[in-house]
Length: 435
Image 1 (spheres, helix red, strand yellow):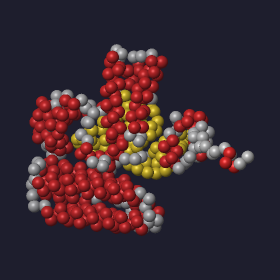
Image 2 (cartoon, helix red, strand yellow; image 1 turned 90 degrees about the vertical axis):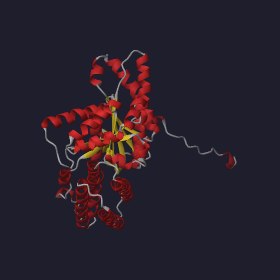
Image 3 (cartoon, rainbow, N blue to C red; image 1 turned 180 degrees about the vertical axis):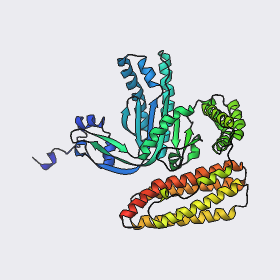
Image 4 (cartoon, rainbow, N blue to C red; image 1 turned 135 degrees about the horizontal axis):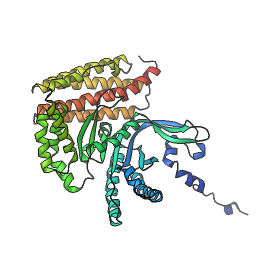
C-alpha cells in the first residue's frame, strides 16, 4: 500500500480524565507551574510572581443558611457559585478555591483584570438577586477585597494528599480587605497596591476610604472603594460629593474632626444612602466628644527612618533615609502654608531619579528576575508624584488635604514599597554577595 494511504496523525486533545482533573486543578495553574498535565505535578512545585488576589464572601451567610434546610443550602451555594465562576473566567481569572460560600480568585495578567472582575461580579449579583426576588427569596449581598503583590503559587501537603495554593502576605491582606467591606457598608475595596498597579485608575469610580494599621505591617495601609457597580443614583451622588468627602477624610485622619464634620454632613445631604459617610460622622462625633484636636505638624512624626525599613544594602538604605528626610521637610512646609516649593520639589525629583538609577543598575548587573515588575512600580510612583506636584503648585486645595496627600502618595507608598519590593530585592542581592 502506498505511503500516501498511511493514517494521518491527529491530536486527540485532552482525555476525559484530564478534563475531569481540570475541574479541580485549573489548566492555567498547570501552565503557570510549567507542567503539561496533572500527572507531571509534584509536591513542592512552585512559582513566584506578581498577581492580583480577589476574595469574595456572602454577607450574613450563617444566618441565611440556618433559615433553610441543608439540601436547599447546598443548592443555593452551587447556584450562586455557578453564576460567579464564568465572571472570573471572563476576566482572565483563575478560581483558586471555594471556601464555603466564598471565592478566592487569582489574576496573573493585570490588576485591571481583577478590578473589572469585581465590578462585573457585583453587576451579575444584581441580576441574580432579581431572580431570587421573583422566586420569593431575599436578595443577598457580598463583599469583595482585592490586593496585588508578589506571591508563591504551588503545591502543598503530603505525598498522598496535596493541594494547589497561593502563599504570601499579599494573600493575607486581600482576605483582610474583604472582611473590611462590612465596616464601611461598601461591597468592593482595593488596596493601594492594586490602585497603583492599574493602567489608569481614573478609568474607574474610586475614592479613598481609610488608612489602616494592620498587624505585621510597618506602615499604615491605604484602602480605596471602587463604586462603579453602585446603583446609578448613589454612584452619581458619590461622584458629586467626591471632593468634600476626600477633604473630610483628610481632616479626620489628621485629627480635625471639627473640620471634617460639616463636610460630611453636606455629603450626607446629597447622598443619604452613602453608608461610609455615616461611619465617618460617627467617628467624628467620638473625636469631638474627646475634645482632642491634632495639629498637622504631627504628620511629620511619622516621616522618618527606622531600622525596620533597612533592605540590607548600604547604598539603597542611605538614599532611602535621605529621601524620607526631604519628604518630611516638604510636609512641614506645606502644612505651614508655604507656597514657594519649587526648589525642594526639584531636589526630591533628583533624589528619586538617583535612587531609581542605583536600584536599576543593581537589578540589571545581578539579573534580578522581577526587574520589570519593580520598574513598573517606579513608573507608577512617578505618575502619582506628578499628580501630587500639580496639586501642590496649583494651590487649589486646602493645605491639610495636601499634607495628607503627601502622607498617602509619598510616605505610605515609599515605605510600603521599601519594606516589600525593595526588601525582596535586597534579599536577592545579599544572596548574590552585595552588601
